[in-house]
Length: 511
Image (cartoon, rainbow, N blue to C red; front, side):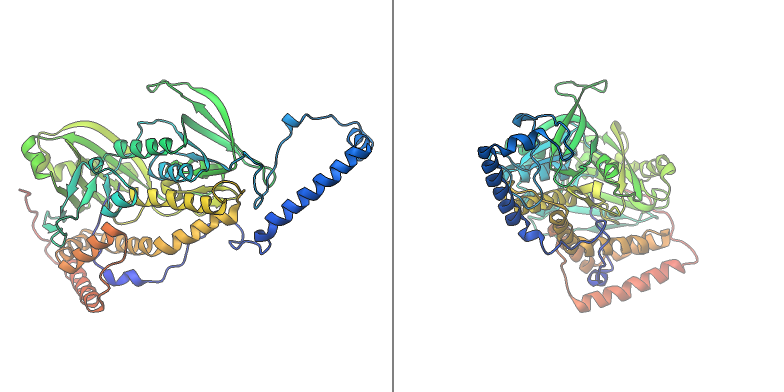
């Protein structure tokens, strides 16, 4: 449900942020961690020399035959011996860090791509390779270059955004966009497949299978054992699969709001929204209207705490809505957006119906030992705008980059302290964005009076500039104290006017 929403309270963006808890126990690594690698290596070398001398003298033979209490022990072959590598220690020659990425959406595919490209042994598990979740499909301009996406992956270049109030007042935003600036509209099945196939090209092993769960390490340095149903070449919904296991050193949970990885590591629950979307073909003359335009509707009839949308795709539009506070009423709100947008989608035929949970805030814990969550599994969808595609892909890539760096491109074992480094960087960079958008949703999505005020404020050129610049490039733009002060006053005045209005504005008819 990725979209862009104006941010009228621009002055709020400088508010201080207190990072959410990210892991059990202390986040600070022990001071001896950095030296553990050399100490362990020297210890292993000394042990090897001593054992060799013992074997030469014959003393080792009796030691192997007798236990500490004189009991006979079973001899084990070298092939059955288990190599345990603790954090900070280099792997034996020919052995690489093994990472399993569970989930093949933007977060998982981006993580797998970065890991494989940088030499880490990578497995990407996705239950259905043509799977995609319900999503408005909006991506910021910066994502195209940052993730080296082909231009033809973008179905529509949106340069016009229409905000529609509860009384159908329309405000056109986008006048501040330059000629080469736009919001990209993509189909998730196309974007996700491209990212997965690129990861495969760069060396990741793609597994078409359903992740069932995993056994956590009992001792430090032990492997994670993942269990999954391997579907291989099976197609359709009646796939049975073959149950298999996979041993890895690190697990990245990118398996969405219903993450099984999160459940296995006891990451805790979070509040979520239900997104419902219908894709429909509409007559050519109506599709022409949407060729470079997206619409966002607000009002109690379409969502009590979010917005509804009509977003253009290649040859159809996506019509949807979402809510947290009234999940059972989602069908009623979907009917509401159908009714509100009726003049512009009349004659439309539904070709696909989609529904999916969308996280509303980060999970209580996002890392445990050598398992970490990214994307929707971690809760990285923004309030107010509902944007998740960019932040999912970004979190997956940033997590992978941290693993690559701290494992020295896969030759060294890592631990929880290494993964915590990623979380600190993420919270520092994007924490303020989540805080501001959460505040905006609480202020403007509480009543129709507040929503009318919100749409009115979107007429302000300063609001449009700050909104689009911040969305398209993922940096806080504007930074005009005078403009922020004027906007703050106008926001308070507008909220007061609509909340104290004795007679509501009449309902307008959409053209």
